[in-house]
Image (cartoon, rainbow over all chains, first blue to last red; front, side, top):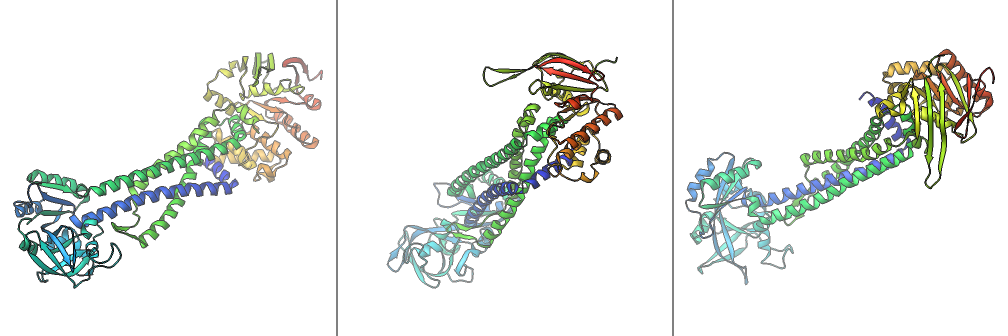
Length: 395
Length: 233
């Protein structure tokens, strides 16, 4: 610490004497830092996109009957109980009816028509905000009103994902499994950014129950106020109501976890390789620098400079290389991040944009700092241990 | 006569080559150097005279024998003690000046003083005094590359002088200087030795410079061939 000013002066003079090399090193390390920040923000972006899609369809927690039962018994009691739990924001109950849809001469495959509580749904899943054409269901609408998922509406006309789909105001028939037929008017099309939501058809809960009571109260959706308490609320519900199956949103959509694990693996792999590249770039730069300054190291040692003094010079140099490049990398990343947020990429599973994950970025900052420290320490330590006479003669 | 400040006792130095051949640089040398003495070590190229300085300066280790400083074997010191010895006890002046390129003339001296634990302001004040003494005050803020050879060597002398070490060792300090600068450097050495009462050990090829010393030690084939007192030289 006593010699910090002395060392800093030495290091900054070193930088200023080799400005081109300094700039190139900073630039290459900045690219590595940007890549690490970007891969993390891509992972966070994917995570948010997928979770938003699933939560926008089923909420945070989904309660379903056990396999042998089509509906949840005593659903109203369970809902009343859940509403008393801490961290529970909203609860919504869905019913369903099995059958097929028919539009003109085209039939859908067997399908589950979903009856929703429109008011509760708004607080639990946010489905009303996903309407892209027409409007969402409400209690003022007549009993023949229906809303369709984007891809389901698309499947009746033209090829898949070709942009042509059933329009608001058109009529579609639902043929229940018992053979009864009912005609519905399409009031709205939703894009839930989720496969299940976009392949769905919804009407008022009471209407679904008029078609069939068999699947009345087939699921209960729960919205939790604090993300970190989802698991806790889920466990409480499962303990208090052992007659139902309770899943959190990740368990309910197994594919999300699969995608997330894959993306996590890829981004972690890229980040690890980049950390190694930062370590090697710094180690090589310091090694070359030391090789060129062997004589200078020998002179300083002959003057009485200690090993730790010599090592400090090059460790500080490598840390400064890293800090400057990380700041530059952060600047480059903020440009990418700003652009990504202004121009989200619309995918079938959601709108993708990068997300700033400060927790992970800080973690990676310290990991990179450690790799820079080691990248400077190792070559500097070995150089400082060389015999003075050999280093002085290396001129 | 006072006790020797430096003693070589049967010191041998062998440089191991990459093949079977090795070079015997010093062959069982015995040597005494006394406080405040000006000693010139002379000899032909490869005779082993620079090796003596490297061993005294702890830049290299002997193959066998003992080198005592005030009765203590300096090559038995641990790394920390060796650093301390280099830092406090010896001022080393090299043939190629060996200034630190990143620092100005002033900073080269300040660097030495700060290594010794002095604060910046004290160091700067003392460094300026030394540069003034060496008539280098106008070159204080120049980097080594902007100084002439003579000026660089004077800064190197200033750096060694700043240490206030008991002895200064100089390895052919005028080898790369013209006669005018060589004369200036030798005048400075003599002045330092007389004014500041330092032990000065000078390795030189120049008979005229060697004659200025209190004693000349002639090295031949790694051995002390002759010791010539000043009045005889």
